[in-house]
Amino acid sequence: MKISHEEVVHVANLARLKIDEKFLGKFAQDVGTILEYIDTLNNVDTKGVEPTYHANSLTNAFRDDIKTGHAVRDDIFLNAPEKDDGAFLVPKVV
Image 1: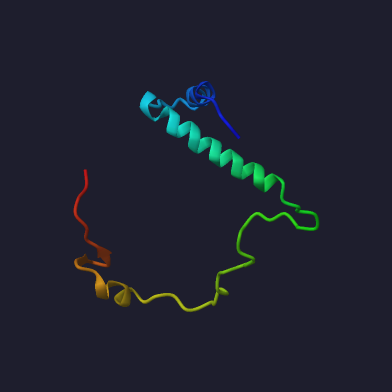
Image 2 (image 1 turned 30 degrees about the vertical axis):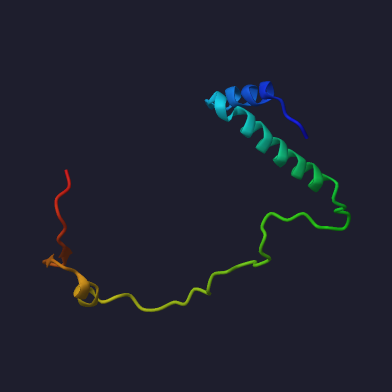
């Protein structure tokens, strides 16, 4: 599908994009190629194909939740670089 320079400029204005004049021809050609591909996809017979919203057929990729005990305070502070009276010490950010 051929797209004119004026159409490219019009769509760019609607999208509030500024396209340099020296790239206008190449951009129009690229958009035309994309529209041709979309037109090819529109001609594909999709009868009997159920619509999908995701490329993978996974329904749930998460593991089951397993109830465990709570963490012990001393274990939590094992990797803390600095701690004081049951709290993490971090640099002051203002």
